[in-house]
Amino acid sequence: MNRFPHALPRPGTGPRPTLLVVAHGSRDPRHAATVARLCARLRLLAPGARVEAAHLDFNAPSVPQVLERLHAEAVAEGRQRCEVVALPLLLTRAFHARTDIPAVLRDSARALPRLSVTQAEVLGPDALLVAALERRLREAGVRPGDIGSTGVVLAAAGSSDPEAIAVIADVAREWRRTTGWCAVRPAFASASGPRTEEAVRALRTEGVRRIAVAPYVIAPGRLPDRIAAGALEGGADLCAPVLGDAPEIARLLLRRAQEQLHPSAAGRGGGLLRGSAGLRPGPDAARAA
Image (tube, rainbow, N blue to C red; front, top):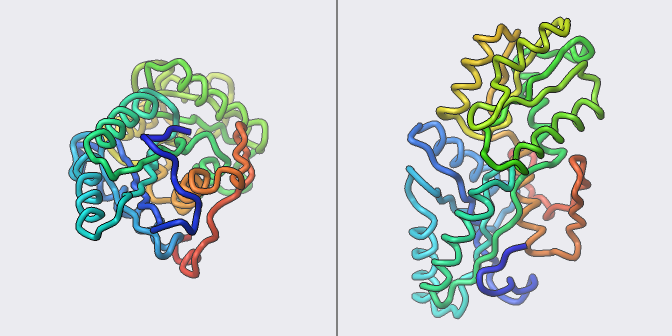
């Protein structure tokens, strides 16, 4: 749990912290639109909470811009502290989660004396992500009766970080172990192999009758497009949409916020199939789902 530079107060000691969803950013306009829809879902799940979005690159507003605005509002309102929980919209603890986000939060905290910001954990691995993957596969045409004869390629963006690559492989193994898919294999759109098309062909060589590609990415962009192209090139039977604004992603953002605000009650474990200990959903939670 990273703190920059102060701990958040316990609930009931002051104004509710702002939930700041921190996205990578992309030149592809679909990326920012997806982030905006996720924030809208999060607002429905956490009524009364202020939810803002910021980007590390390419899109506005940037993380410093949002923090400066929130700090200026606190000063204008006479508040001594401006509390923010930064929620990385990232699936693994690769470079952006371990280096980029902490650095930008630290720099802002040094420059803004009333700012108190903490960084929540990344989204994965988590059972809600698997549920979102399966939702997208169903939307793409996978039926319950197909599962036993279907192999899945879990296609991630890719990373030069060996730990992040290992996490994707662990997710694939656990997903296969806990479900009825005949195979689940990892693939990557960049940095490391195998590529999506290579994983598809390998499954076909092994005799898998039906192959589905499940993009393990949140928003559309260049790398997800590369995954879709690889699925087509490799001869996959179908390629699911990206995770996008799936309700499970919004619920997971809410859970990560709760883990920062109520660490003693979170009960966060290290496995793929974690128990849920979220903030109490608001009355509009059904609409968010």
